[in-house]
Every structure is written in structure tokens, then in C-alpha cells.
Length: 247
Length: 277
Image (cartoon, rainbow over all chains, first blue to last red; front, side, top):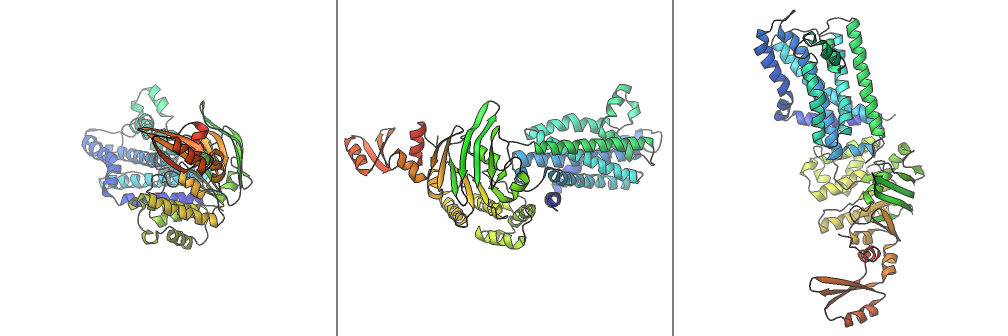
């Protein structure tokens, strides 16, 4: 049986390891969530009264979800887009005995690992700063699904964007609004009802809900189902786009 | 080994390739010659699963290039025009990951064998980003050979290389030819096509305008060329043999150069344009 998804994944992991050894790279990757954690969590957070726990307790799961989203997505979208348009390393997979699902699996897994790495750093730092959260199976499952959704979305964007600037456009229109409006920094019930309806359609909302849920419940199940559906949709689209790929 | 029938590719309304029909035999070195935009790379992209044709069909080793890609891909290898090596990986790692995609047996031994063949064994564990253009090009060909392909596609294999490295690569291609690998190469270098190819197809604006061995093609337009140099103007006359060329030269009052005809002259004769434009 061919295991070419593993070869693609291993190659990306080797490249990731090499980049991790560059201090500037790691710092630039984690800079934004660390900034939010310190500025909002420690600075502004002391002025904010929450119904339950501290603002830092509320913020940390949101930042974990956000860094998982941005890192999973950015790694895959950028490496695929650059590999396809500039370095042309993506074309190697199309011209060798690798099937579309193997390309998607390898790339997506690599994006998930990258997202998990970034979110783990934020998680550890938040805990060191005194935050409390529920590290439950729901939390872990939510984080994994979140990585899967956004890494697969990264494959879609990496395949469809016509230039590197296009990737930035997708980031500005899809990723950035989610980071701000899906419950990372403030509870959704403070938003107007119509905005809440829209926000409930976005996957990061459900990741935030899962990461803040201490136990299984009907709401958790709905979020799990919706995240799984979003992941399935992105994976299916990625495979379809690779099958139809033509220069 | 390769059978192409009415292969056509349009980008919007613009034809990149129109009704290309040809057959390439096993062990043959076939050259697609033509200026930039003639349709050479488009042909390779369609044959190597990188593009779908608008119409027409092609088979390699009996397999349809669209419908039977999983069966076809293990048999072919591509050395693209652009150097698409992973620059952050070493030469060894580049070949290793590529070889793993084909399940190459005894992979480390095969890698060292090819690195030695490409004269890169001393740089096996150096990252590719530090390699010169010639070294990267040699590594690219070595990578294409990892899977012992039956058909090798070389898209402008020597573009941008200095003459010495180019000749080194020609020797490598001749070795592959001796091993019986079918090679389809594209080039816009006349000397390359004449030196390496058993047969040449000349493409212009997406159409195949001539197909034969380099010798037959040049013989068809006349064996000799009389170039008349008059200030900045240059005119060409094709003559059947050396005597006819001398006779024509004697008639000229300006500077005259007599040389053997080449594929560039064939192209000029067929299109009225220079190949290198």
C-alpha cells in the first residue's frame, strides 16, 4: 500500500524543524497571539469583569483557537501557493504516483502539527501567567478539528489563489474577521442578534465553544458536528481542485 | 512508446497547441524545437499530468495520459524547465523524498549512485540553496532518474547554462540514450537539437510545421547557406550544394559567409522568422 501522504508530511515536518531553529521565525509566528495575551489578558483584562472567572481565563482558550487557526491555515496556504506558483515544488506531486487525497492528507496534517505547536506555546504561557482552563477531551478534539478545518481551507486557498497577494486577500476577508468576531476576545451574546446568526455559521465560533466547554452537552455536540462538516467540506473541495488542476 | 493524436490546447480563445499528431519510438531521443510560446512546454505538461488538453488524446506505453494517470506516472519522469528542487533540503534529501514517492528499492544506494553520476557525491549533504545553476540542473536530472523511468521528459534542460556545463549535460543525456530510455526534450537551441535528437519536430505558434531527422530537415532546404553581410543588413540564400554556394558567393560584392545549413535555416525557410526571436 502506498503511503505517500506520510512522505509529504515528513518532508514538511523536516522543513518546519529547520525553520523552527531560526529564532526570528518562531518569534514572528507567535508574536500576534503573545501580544494579545499580554496586552488584553494582563493589561486590559484587569479592568474587565466577567460573569465567571477572570478575563484571562476567558481569553486563553480563544487565543489558543486563534493561533491554531492562523498557523494551520497560513502554513498550508503559503507553502502550497509559493510551491505552486514560484518554486513549483507542488507540481512534483502531480507528476509522481501520488493521488490527490494523499496530497491533501500530507499537507493538512503538516498544517495541523504547525497549528498545534503554536497553540501549545500559547497555552503553556497562559497557564504560566495564571489562567485556568478545562483541558478535557472536548478541548483536545476541538483543537484538532480546528487545525483540520483551517489546514484544509489553506489547501483550498493555496490552490485557488492566483498570486501570493491573493492569499493575503483571503486572510483579510476570512481569517482576520473570524479572529475578532468568533468569540476570541468577548462573548458572542454581546453582539446584535443578526450578527450572532452570521457568526454561528463560522467554524472558529464552534472551536471557541468547544474549548470553553467543561463537559459534553447538546451544544458541544452541535459544534462538533458543524466543525466536522466544515472539515469534510474543505477536504472534499481540496481533493476536487487537485483532481481538476490544469495549467 | 508515445502516441499523440490531434492534441489541442486552448487558453481561453488563444491556441497554445493545435492538432499535434506524432509518434515517438522506444529508445528514441525526440526533440521539440521552436521559439518561446510555440507550444513545447504545453505539450510536455499535457503528457505529464500537469494539464488537460482541450481535445485530442495521447498515450504513453499504451496508457492514456488522462484516464490512466495512476498506471502512467510510475513509468515517466520530468525534468522541468524551472529548477523545482527544495532549496532548504540537501541534495540527498531531495532525492530521498522523491524516490520515496516511487517506492524506489535500496533507495540510499540508488541516491549515491546518481549523485556520483551527476558528480555531486561530495555535496550530498549540502543544502541545495548553496549550489550553482549547473549543479542544480544536474541534480534535477539525477532526481528524474531516481525511479528508472522508461520515458524521460526534459523541458529546456540546458536553458541559462554556460556552454561548458551545457556540453556536460549533453554527455549525460547521451548516456541515458545509450541505456535505452525514451527521451522527449524541448529546446530552442539549434545545436542541442542537432547534436542529441534522432528526430525533431518543429513547432511554431502551436502547430507542428516539420517532422524528420535533423539531417533530412536541413537537406530538404538545401545543404549550404550563403550569408551576405551588407552593413547592418544580412541576407540568406539556401543552396543545394557547396559548388552552388561558391557560385552564388562569387556574384556578391559585399562580405559573404558560406556555411552548412542548420535547423535555424529550416525554421526561417518555413516561417520567415528567426528561431531565436
